[in-house]
Length: 185
Length: 436
Image (cartoon, rainbow over all chains, first blue to last red; front, side, top):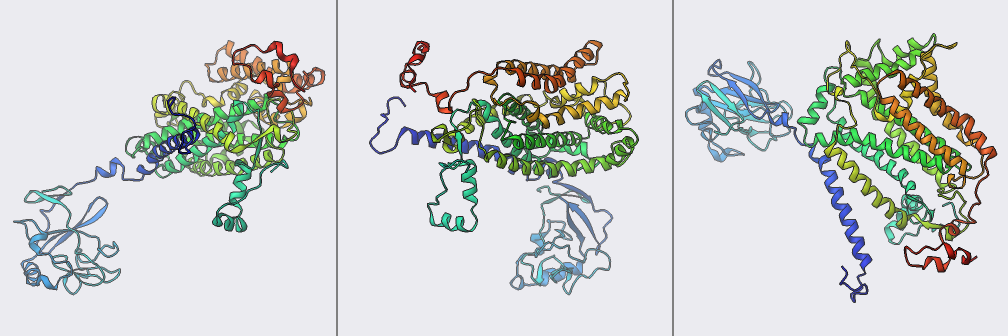
């Protein structure tokens, strides 16, 4: 700085430089100090460690379903009947709000296994229809009691306020009777 | 604010003018810590520690609120939740270490602040209430720190809670029922942990409230200064902003650097390893001591070993409480009209003896119990009380103070010739030419 004349012609004084430098230095320090206070809000390591759930599906008969948990969210694992598969395939894609085929929503060779989050895409309630005797709604899939969203046998939205089909998480069959939810396959 | 030449707040932008007419908050800030608060021009670095105490209170509140997002106050889960913060929560380790060591730094700067007040007579008229409110803050800090130390529910936490609440059982008749009432049980357990957590969250905000009163009371007469001489005119003062904001700012950065060094490189230096063992109500750690900032009081507590009319246990507890409550009477124990210790040759010597005495008490409070340590602690505890109850009143009565400077300006400016002399040149021979 010694070679910069104190009376530089553009009206910027050495003191202005010092002010900007000091305040910037303190500002960078303040941001660095605040960052741990913000990052602590994100999921901690033990929550991230719950990223996969292994499910034994050997006991689930055709036409039955089970509720399991992945990342503290309900997951519906449903063993579709041939009738339900046929119903799902009979619907033209143009009639759907969120067009997807049953094939796209299941794994090849396991098209009878429909695995979705049990979280209504409207506002997050758990739809009915997975348990024995629960209201499956007019389309034979799921019915959300909160605001009346109705899903078909491929868990696609057919009627009601929900914008999307029930979400299909990543999952992989590690054996014919074992599914690991959360693992890319 | 307090002086006629204090600059009034003049909003420049239309919005600020609009706001000022409806809610004069910027005016309040300007008058308290802005250009509208005139401060003596001769403050030395000992005057930086009040702002630092405020800074560490803020750090404790901010990091504490974050820790409370992850901590659970259950006898089964508290210890694990702290370990969870240390291991799993993003940046949890740095936030907890910042909170742990923030308490130590808060006490360190507060002790320096208190001793600054003792040396420069900051407790004297017209600032008695500033002093007493400061002591209230200090007592609240002690309560908050103690309860915070219990929360991790390690061995030192548990036995600290047992011992400190045991103080109350020293009182005859109602002592033991009082202790049981405070704990909500016969030993520290869930009820005690939950109420300590609740109060540990509450008290810092009470402290913040009393800090506002402390600053309000201070700003009525204005800040003291190292000469103890009252401000006489505008030449004696500088506006708080930018002069003291800049000085406080750079010094705060320096202290934060030391704080960061401890947080990152020696975070457990001031702690006890035993507190990383979960609380065990059936086994006391072999060497149980409080945190360092309580050591002098712990030494006073342990100094009473013989029953004399009252049980030794009660004497210890009474002496410990009295050692702090005594300070509330300081403005009337030291009657010398001279505030600053720099102009009180006798007082100054005894002040430094008191500092040494408190350091000895601190050492004894943290040391192992041996016959020599007990004897030294008893002597130091006796001297502590003698300083305030005997030495100070006598010194203020018989001491011949040095002549005071005529004004603050006079004490810092020594005439044109001396001011303009090159640095390092002895200016002793020129004192005869001091103007005025």
